[in-house]
Amino acid sequence: MERLLKADKIGRNMVMKTIDKEAIPLIKKAEKENIITAWDRYERQKPQCGYGQLGLCCTLCALGPCRIDPFGGEPKRGVCGADGDVMIARNLLQMLAAGAAAHSDHGREILEVALKTAEGKAQGYEIKDEEKLKRIAKEYGIDTEKEIKEVLKRVVLSMMDEFGTEKGRIQFIERAPEKRKEIWKQLGIIPRGIDREIVEAMHRVHMGVDNDYVNILLHALRTSLSDGWGGSMIATEMSDILFGTPSPKESTVGFSTLKENKVNIVVHGHNPVLSELIVAAAEEKELLELAKRKGADGINIVGMCCTGNEILMRQGIPIAGNLLSQELIITTGAVEAMVVDYQCIFPAVLEVAKCFHTKIITTSEKAKFSGAIHMEFHPEEAFDVAKSIVKVAVDNFENRKKEKVLIPEGEKRLIAGFSCEAILSALGGSVKPLCDAIKEGRIRGAVGIVGCNNVKITQDSGHVRLAKKLIENDILVVETGCSAIACAKEGLLIPDAKNFAGEGLRSVIEKLSIPPVLHMGSCVDCSRILVLLSEIAKELNLDISDLPVAGAAPEWYSQKAVSIGAYFVASGVFTVLGIAPRIFGSKNIIELLSEGLDKTVKAKFAIEPDPEKAADLIIEHIDKKRKELGI
Ligand code: CUV
Figure (cartoon, rainbow, N blue to C red):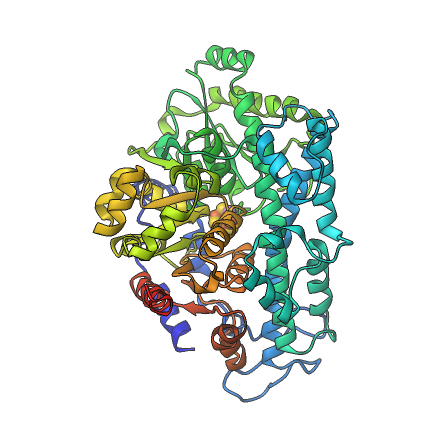
């Protein structure tokens, strides 16, 4: 409770919206032109509902909405009789299930495209990483001597089976260290199938089903594992097979990646099956010629959020911003089209776009926005649709009003593309040099900073301050999602950022010519972090929970982040959250998610809104683990 109040106080006193320097002229422009952004809407929501913040509000069924008095008075129970523990646990599981569903459904769509590719029915897709396909085929026990498209088809069908799964145990679980699998087995939380766990979660939160908060939260862990080691891992691996496994690429970041003299297209959302083809379509001669005829010097694609991370990691396409940048980028007046698929897209982009010539183009049957142009994407005619989308943007260039354009200057460099394969290759083929550096203390530990932006924290400040303090203390940082974009804007994703690193870490990264903060990809690529941790643990013959590592989500907002946080902890990673989850109405649940989990899965959550203090907690944890290992 005390922590939550503290977090809220920080929220209320917040004067600064962002530390992104390129965002400031755009925020001023928005204010001047009366363009409403998420920060304004947040102000208008205040005070946010106190019951809701504590998790003591239930809207699951029509007996309610119900609420519970947090001070022990009446009402103590909802109409059905649920107490605060059950209410909070059910709300949390429902939130997590939505996040796991989002990641996993994204994974399923990649499989659908891959299947059509294997059958020769998809337009514009091919197998880019045969070596990886064969490696994964072996994990599934599939014969790799067959024709490559046949191998792909069999792998895809086996992965599709993971969703319903008859096997009763998803395949990639086998990648975890033995000790970890044993813990999951003892607790009975090995995921049986991706859809199964998510559907069961929705069943359990139905009124009158699971009324034991411990049991509900155990299933939450199982559901999260079906995401991290299931849906997300499948999304990552199959994306690598279709679009190539990322390797280090130099690019640029920020609003300044928009070009005044070019047609600017922002791809926003999550799934690379769309953004990859938009990038390819923008290279088509006829479209480039059309752009020229319209008076533009070319077509400029920039990414936003995780679909941006996907094309940045594989193709070096510039990344314009993260979650809280999406309205501001339209405010530049220089965006011909914002093309979206799904997840993390504010409905508000439509409203902002009304003030400019920007067209919002939706592409997914499951994610329509009223008022947007809908151009549906299907693998069979994907490249044609991609070209039509780019054409809409090019045609729109002549509607741009020069006097309304404001593109901030800056353009920071970054290096992205650190897949596990890329990290291993930088290390000379095995994790051993990294393990040695950890043992010798040149690297004190490693931390994965992940997740979003949230209006409750000055944009990017949580990610950047935490990352800076960690690298200063010789802790290697790996990042995904909006976190990686935040640190890129701050110049932490280039080898020159070694100047922010402590002496030990600097000596290692200098030798490898890598930055102190490694961009590992999009949110589904948090699964890469699991694989890397497993490799390190196996090399040292330890469990993940024995390693001097931690996770952090300093500015998280989304349901997906709940799932990521849960599978980090369930996989043995101590994880610090910068935003309080809605659990403070139950002492039992606070106790369970901290000490209770520590006793069972050997890792726990901590909540700390101040990034400096979060870093202290992490350093303390890492030093404790080092001591236990005698290093
Ligand atoms: Ni990509 S990290 S807002 S949900 S893109 Fe979505 Fe994960 Fe950023 Fe968060």
